[in-house]
Length: 205
Image (tube, rainbow, N blue to C red):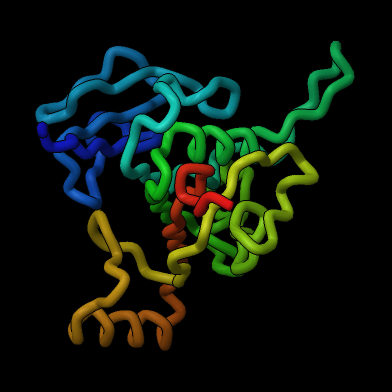
């Protein structure tokens, strides 16, 4: 029996997609066209505030979003049709769709109340400590806005972002650095690590 190849997708990747879980195959999505990078299978072009993630259902073992979610609008008005869209909620639906059952979403974003969340004029989506409840069990508050997926929160913590991945159980040196960052007010970003819950994961009745 052949071994299943693990795949990772980095959202808003630019020309340097990241691979925090060291999957064998790395893919990216960016708003710019004709991007490529060494060791990357493919970088697809898409505006994820308007378009779906251009991959099939259940295709990835993990997804990442580094300093990306804050650029996805919370709401958009289609005046001609008289419809309000929620691009961020729609993106979270897409993240859930392309993850396999049990797949992991890892995101790092500047967050309230740190000033970095508001400094950049292109930041249109400021997240806070309880924002994950719109997408995670048992709350799933995003259902009222069209969220149809389900995630389970693995962990959430505030960090001064360094490198590609903040481990769930940091070593003594990194733990000390986190404490110092907290004392100095430098924990500007929020880390989300959440698992996609899908029907295949539920036990049969």
